[in-house]
Image 1 (spheres, each protein chain N blue to C red):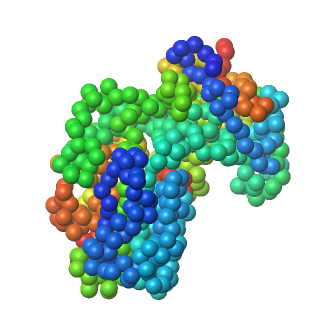
Image 2 (spheres, rainbow over the protein chains, first blue to last red):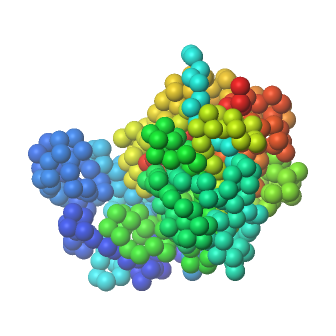
Length: 145
Length: 398
């Protein structure tokens, strides 16, 4: 477990299992290399997350995975008290806008910060956190400076 | 607008007692469901062997726990022939809309007496409130599950926070929904929570997923409710005053889609109940306006979603749900639109939307515990949930 008492934490690595499909796997393979990517239509350039088989704008199945800066803006979030088996944990699941993948939102978590210091509109930056089976998940901290 | 003549009606409603989560065991889910069906048949003056149609939602189960099925009902009730058995897709969002499925079957001549049913039994491993922490890993859930979104309320708290940010909605508004529904439950023998709640109690309650606290979450309960729909013509020959089906609608727009399972909704749909398009279609079909509705039975898995439905169903403008409820508008006593007069899922029992249908029928028969004087039109909703969400307008027999 990460962080001091009262700070937003990540779930313990062994509690988080990732499942992939051929469509979603590139996102997780990139995360394992600590690169944040987003699904972009190879035909019309529209972004979408989570990745789905067809572009909702043009129905293309062509998909590319540009690497993003890792910057995000908090669109909304929750402060969750407890998780099954982890009564005292504080989690901050967040819905994030990605400035370099407009139109796509990412659901992630904000950690290492007191929940009271988080606000909608706050800038955040990605880091990668190991979970079960050798995968890593993107998590976010408040942006520095 | 012109009111269409109703072509189908609800003629029977039946229920089991309501139980706290898990307390219905050792009764099986088929026993619970069967008791509700038999009670609905008795109410309608029918034999269970007259039933020839089933119109479900949520996969003929709560969608997560134990399930039930038409074949088993046929076997245990000795129903001679079933000519229609179908389910709306999705989950609890289809509760009100499943009456539209029943109507479609009846109008198409596919069935005569159609049962809509929900039975819920939450054994320890089938607890809906933490379902997303316990389902096996899945490629789409993997974009949600790792971050603490362990149950539906955790998801919806994110929408509630955005509503507060965009419109200045206060926790006092969510509290008013909780307090008013609790007041409605206090005189009801069927309600599992009858002790009064004060505003101080509300603000002292444990936070589960801020901005939502314990009281903003619905109860965790077991039980079953069934209703029977038939043609308006046949309804006239049955003992109960028919409750006319004036309009049904289900679905959602692309802006909502999978809703809080997607989180990509553009504003203003993000901080909404996803019901706006269904509400518009529903009022058009029924030929009525929000001002005509006498009692609103709004799906209340979480208090914040009652507020957003009040906006999406046009009882107030978008963004004004907070001041609207804080004005006392939804109170049974003195409100302009009494909401969840049965105490709802927050205070009476959570049977995945079916208590709202039961209450609407009682209101329009004039037999409700908290009877709205002269109630002629009731709105019933299903969801907010991933597509479909649904709505239903019922009318007192003309």
